[in-house]
Structure formats: C-alpha cells, structure tokens
Length: 273
Length: 299
Image (cartoon, rainbow over all chains, first blue to last red):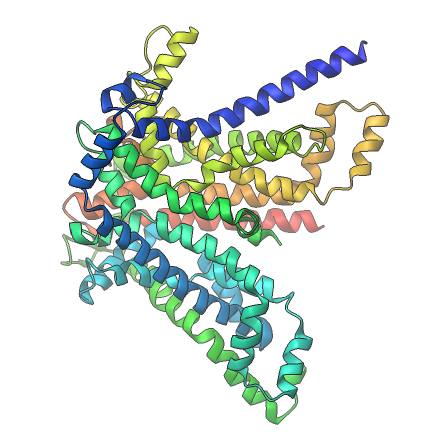
C-alpha cells in the first residue's frame, strides 16, 4: 500500500469533514450579520452579500421596539438573577462542604435530586403562586424561582473541595468569624469558580424564554428574547428587523464568550469533575 | 466532622452550617419542592381554571384517549431516539479528530464548532426558520448544487418539520457535547494510541476499541443530559412553528402541549399537571437508568 497517498487521502477527508462542520456551525452567524444589512426580500431570496439596508433595519427596529427599555429589562433580570444565585449558591456550597453533619449530607443528596425536576411540571403552580402574590408582569417573578439552583450549589461544593482548609484554620486563629472567613477569604480565593458560575447563570438568565413568556405579558416588561420571538412570529416577518433583534439578543453572551473563553468552557465542564 | 463532635464547639459549628445553607434550601423548598408536590395533587383534580375538584384517576384515563397527547409523546420520544445518537456520534468523531495535536488550525475549528452554544435557543430557532423558509437560502443552495429538484417544505410538511427540528437541535448542541469529550480525551494516556498504531490497528478501530470504551462514563453523562433536555424541548419548537406545534401537530412536544393546555386554550390546570407528570416520570426513569448503568460500570 502506498503510505504517502493514503495519508494525503486521510488528510483530505479529515480537513474536508472538519472544515465542513466548522462552516455549517458559523454559517448562521454570517447569515445573521449579512441579513441585518439586507431587506427582508433579499434575505429570503438568499442574498449572501452585504446590502445597504442596515440603517433602515435599525431604524425600523427602533420604531417597532422600545429597544433601550427591552434591553434594560433583559439586563436587569440577568444581573439580578446572577448576583442572587451566586450569593445564595456559594454560601450553600461552602456550608455543605465545610460544616458537615449526617442530616445535612442527607439533605444534600435530596437536593441533588431536585436537578431532575423538569420545569414543565413547575410552571403551573408557580404561575398560580405568582398570581396570588400579585407578581405577574414583574421582573421579580421571573427572577425568584431561578435563584435556588441545585446545580450551582453542586458546582460550588465541588469546587470548594479544592479550597485549602489551612487558610480557614489560620483565619480562625486570627479570630475571624465564620461570615468574615467566607467574605474576606473564600470569595477572593474562589474568583475563578465565581467567574465560571457567573457565565452559566448569566447565560441561562439572559436566554430564559418559557418562564418569562408566561409571566411577562405587558409590553413594558418584555425581554429581548421575547421581543425577537414575537417579531419573528409575525405573519410576514420583516427579516431585516428580526436580524437586528437576534444580533442584539446574541451580543452579550457572545461577548462574554470571547472575553472569558477559558472560564466559559470551564463552567460548561463544571459538572463532570 | 471530627471537629464538630468535640463538645462545645460542635453546636456552634452546626448553627453556622445551617445558616450557610438555609437561603438556598428555603428557596428550593418554596419554588421547587412545594410546586412539584402541588402539581402532583393537581393532577388528580379536574375543572376549568381555578375551579378544581377531585377527580381521582380521570386525568390519567383521559391521557390514553387523547390523540394529541399521544402525538406529543411520540414526537418527544422520536426526537431523542433519533437526535441524541446522531449528535453524540457526531460530537465523538469531531472530538477525536480535533484532539489530534498535528491538525493545523484545530483551535479555530474547536471555537467554530463550539460557537452555536453561545446563541440563545430563541435566536437560533428564529435564524433557522428564516434559512429553511420555502424559498430560503437552504432550499436554493440545495437546488443549485442539484441535490433536490424542488424546494423542500421544511416548515409546512409534517415529516420535514420534524427533520428541521432535529437538524436545529443538532446544530446547537453538538459542539457542547464535543467539549466534554475533548476534556475527557485529555486524560487518556497517549501511549495507548502509540502502541495500537505500531501494532497496525487502523484509525477507525482505534476509535471504536480505545476511545469509545475509555470515554464511556462521559458518553453516558452527556447522553443523559441530552435526553433530559430533549424531553423538555420547548423553545425551538415554539419558535420554529409559531407556537402551534407544526403542521398537524407534527412537531408538538409534551412541554408545548402543557403550555397550550394552560395558557392558550381554556386553562385546564389539572389535566396539564397530569401531562407534566409524564415528563417527571420519564426523567425519573432515565435517571434510574443512569444510576444502574453507572453501578454496572463500577463493577
């Protein structure tokens, strides 16, 4: 067998396949960016060149949608959810790992089981609860059920196993109280864990769709995800405008990904340690 | 633990331990445990809106006689039976190709294939809906290459709508799974491959006889999370098919059916809760399966 030509053939197949997959992965992004510069008809016809409709599309988007408000709604929900989830979950992860008792270990196992609960089984009772509490059409209703997350607690507990207990002992000798140890030693030491968890929670909150769709019914409270969805479901959607919306909806998570790529992947992998 | 039992300090420790975990436990109890128990109770009730009364197993009987439910269940199962294996295999092949340090530009390829994970489910569904429109870019490209003679009705034909949903989910999640395999491959001893290569084991056999067995735990893990994710499928279907579940309910999923029962039609909380418990049972069954598979592995 001719080893050289076989190797070349393998290389061609490998690069061909990987290249094709990379192309297919990137293509929708390119289509989205080009689409924002074209008119709706050109987009549907499959024009793959930059057009001149970008300004028109942006202008139409801003007249149809109260963009600053919508963007602010999304940001408010994502930031609030992320801050609260990180605070609550890191406290719990630290607590479960540092202070053990038989009861707490059992509760922890039960807690992990809640990861299996599908959201579809929660949404009706949650909707009724929020209705009774008068929280329909508020961002608080969106955020509240997402704060207690068994998965993020689990993630923090796993990472806390690597936290050097000498630091804790030394701080105790110095007379620091438990909350002080947590706040002044644990939090700074675990920065990278917080960064990875931040990414997971922020992305989930920013992209959340089903629950906001149920709870946020007034236009003043809607998020960018909801707006993009309703723009696209019009009978004759203006695809140029839809593209501007999807770009705005994707931009923050894309930025987080490119600036924190390592923590991003680390966060994704968090659960298989 | 040993410290905690040493007399006086023990109680102190315990109080602190509970204080640290209390907020998370409280929130999870209020927003997960309470609702999940409530919806179990609800599934035995029937009526319109909030006017519910006890109905025993009437809802469960209704499930079997509800063709729309059967359709949603079949669709949901079809999605994961067809889609999850395709995606896992694709991700495995890509990971093993991209794990080769001699591959030029593998950093670029990895990032590119991972990129779909960054988009929101709604955003990419909307993009796919546009690309797969009847006279859209996908159909016109396929026609230009000569693969198809006439445009495929992706969004309006029951069969093709399902295919479209499967293509879309595969696009979004393959890179995500690939990352798990790449991370696990870092832990495989390279010399195993060297020995196999010297012994003349061909590349495909190295993949099926070395890579796959060694990655079994990760493959299992990703299979389970993908399956659970697919069972709960909502965003994609809702946005690809205008919230209706496609042509003659061809893409309707269980989650979408629950949503429709609760928020689109005259609300029937009891029956919707029953359907939602079908998802709970499916997920629980799969979790048990994972548990037993994991035990088998440890033997």
